[in-house]
Image (cartoon, rainbow, N blue to C red; front, side, top):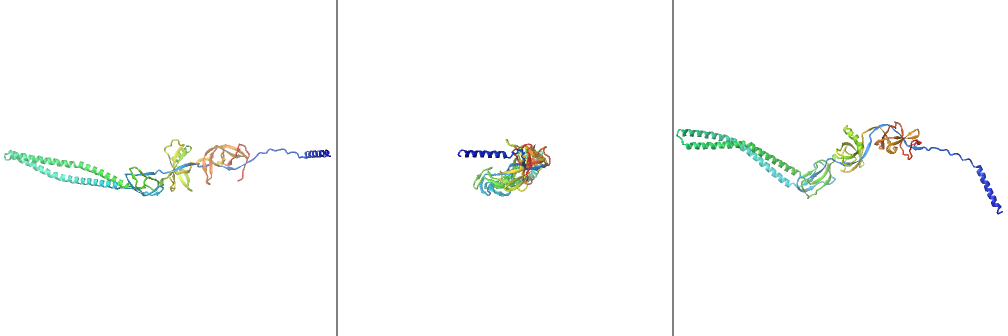
Length: 409
């Protein structure tokens, strides 16, 4: 039994296995099926749209000035601080002007003295003219005395000494007339010299008055203080910087335009087309327009600097602040706006053609932002027509002919 019982189990097991193998179903033949990829698609059409380019800009002002001392003096008062807004004509720094006022008094005295000399010269000229008439009358009398003395001497009634005395008197009178005429003729030259001296004195007086007025430094325009270089008690020399400020009404944005966009912007400026741009800062969106291009290219730069003016109120941004600027380039014709995900590489997209992928080579024109604020890319291609279904989702294994279907949104 110890031998027969195990053999019996083995036989029964083999019989059961053979029964199972004989009754198993036939294996179904495998059928190969093609995988279908779900993709997002978008219908496209040709449009005329303006590409945008994002640039880094810097806040600048063409009217940023350093106010300097016009005279050597002591600082009496500083009324502003860095960052403060000031209005045109507001006092910024006051200098000691005692020396300037003393010089002004001297210049006024010099001018008054010369004016008095001119008045004296005019009076003397009138007196010389009046005296000349009398001296000419005296000369005529002296000549008659000579003639009378000569007649008496010829008749031996008068002495020769009387003739000599008469002639001496006549010559002295002629000398006096000549001197008087010379004084009258020199009047014009003397008056011109005095007028020149008075003009110089008045010019020096005006300079002294200007020095007095320059002792108080005032704001030349509505601006903002960027630096204060002096304090009360400082001694300043002519030309020393006192206060830096800029005109808050003339701030602008400087940004470098890449060379590839330069031709279009230059043509737009030449044709007086307005190039708009936007700036988002401190939670505000500010509108700007392209005003001009720089006339010089910095060494090593990859473009040309452009200057954008704010179209509405000046925001009062700090000078030197870096900002993100979005510039709307001149409009391009026959372009398609598609999401960035539709682009494979830099120059290829796929469209849906009879349920399969079909690759199309494209030219990337630029970036674009639609009315809803969505970022897109503008492309141009002869292989795309209006109404084509472009794949706008990325497939890791995208190849021509791949089976696809539109994914439900």
